[in-house]
Image: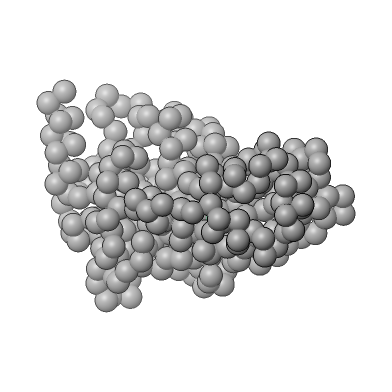
Length: 302
Ligand code: DGL
């Protein structure tokens, strides 16, 4: 999901799938949604758990597809971008919480003093230590973007675990692209993933891995294919469920209302969004004002 801005203004704009802007005619009223933030479709792997645990919560999925991909950009630039977007979202929809469903953005804003965080953020990040503890063979692969793996806290955690385990960090932007392509209806060839992995591990090492840490929210979309690449892996570590639990603990008392909850997806660029409309619909998110209004009309009739 990549494209041009719905406006050339420096201030971020949030558009719906039909190009209309989020703030014209679409509102959550006095209700405060939870924002699920990502660069593309990766956050849907987190949204899935949130939808299951908190079916009554109003959700606004925001994909910064104008800036996609995040993984090849430096953390400092991402932190500045995310601050701009979050400040605007806070003004627009006054969210109860912002779930940072992108490891790359999350580690970028975790550095002390990041202005993007205002106490309303719940951040996903790769649980390196937990993954290492789960591994019996002490053979661990960490899949993430290069920006995430260049983060100093992540680097330090990997270095510490390397004292008693074999840890292979694999940075792959190509895998992010493959996940986007798969969700847009394309087919992922397992040999392509195997080729990527073979640049980091010998065949023997690959077959000895018992723990794979999915340190990018796009990668759970590829887990079927990845299982074939790491046939001995028993632990597939995905922190998404814990993020949903953390959110539930934070907002539980505010989620009960009798109307059907609002679910909307917004983007920072309209280009390329249409091909994903079915994906968002299939995952419970309306993408246009019309579908949102129809959804609300159905609510009124119920
Ligand atoms: N899904 C994002 C993550 O969890 C990365 C995607 C991108 O590179 O934009 O890190």
